[in-house]
Image 1 (tube, rainbow, N blue to C red):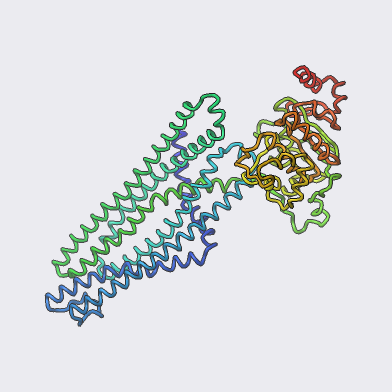
Image 2 (spheres, rainbow, N blue to C red):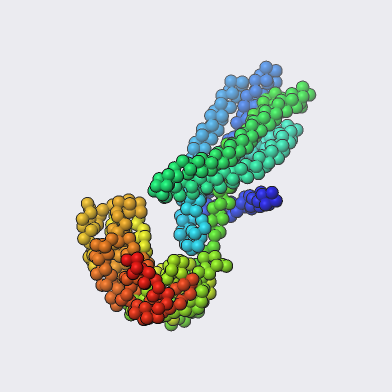
Length: 620
């Protein structure tokens, strides 16, 4: 119970901070489009003046009629209407009213278009920066963050944040400016009635602040439930095969229905508070008009003001509360945007764990040059120097690991499941940062190398090759500027060209998302073509032939021999029969190096490797 209360207090505090962070985050984006922004802001002045002038002009009509009936001119009639006939005075007022209406309609349309345009640009800019930031985060962040939650923040949360500006921020500034002009006009006409209307704004302010806080809490919970809902949806769609094979359709549907119901309950709370704001403003505006009529009627009877001025203040009361009504209409978008801001700013504040080192201007030319690895198969001495690594700080997967791989050497990593083989590849490519120790390439700490340079130096073929929607060519080049001849040459060198040319459109064949219109073996073959076209000094094979049938594996084995010739290779394989010809085998157990040697040497040692090999031979 205490934890829940602390959570509410923490959210309330974060909500207050978010109001300030809104300006801090949105203003720099808005300033990227200064011309459109200042144009939209500049149009607020004539709009507010036109809004305040209309009640005065209508009050002047009443004053003219009263003066005509009495046969005398009152001092409430404006100077340019004095000594005018009733018909002529009304004609002038109608022209002025038509002019203010024309100005208001024209400028409202222009301003609305400019504000929406700026809002869409801001939304696009935030989404671009958020995407760049998310793709810069380390794999550790994605291990603990559901994909559905990220998608919610990159789409609906960013859209809601953009709506704060396009439908809320400028609108509120315009409404506040309009209210200030109306208040100034009211005090110039009559301070008693103006003071009454200002006093009526106090309860509105208190109630709106209260409902705003309650709405913020409910909307925060609703957005969290929506993230959970999207995560559940994404998980079930990706794993639909398992769901169907194990007959979990009904069970998963009940789970989804339960999450959906929680989301609906929180949305209902946001609807309640949104409706409460609208209803409160409507009632208080009616009370304000009644108050003006009551006090104004007394002042008319006392001869302090004329009927025309009372009419003006009744209209002022309506115009004064119109911006508040518009605020009520924007209330949902504003509060949803503020809630989304908390979530988006949390994501933007997520630290980029793995960064390139900034090379100082004082760095010597020799030192600066050493930070770039040469693209030569002869280069690349890999040293693990007392390396410790864990996915969690208190749970190490690799412990005090020390070994060296010489240039051009073929090394295999073997060991039981969970020994840390794939973890070595992940930290070598800096998908994760090591906890202690050093990893050196030609004597240079990989943390001193630009990540793009480090990853250009190696190609990694994983067990499950990921394919993007697009054609075969783009899935091999992956956006780099390789010519079609280079792509075709790489495909031929890896014996992949044969199956590509059998596809309906050859290299132009379109692949569906994740390459679902190819077999697992065909997808793996494309991964080999990706590696070949890049011609890397280091090649890493992480169970790369696990998804290949016997015929396909035979095709790729010949290509692998060509691909591995003259370059350094690290091979992870569970089938020990495939690594008998490597130069050395590193045997791992629980994150530690327990045996090193060639296939024959390790068999003679009769240790862990020999046990694993004999077990596989028996299974075979």
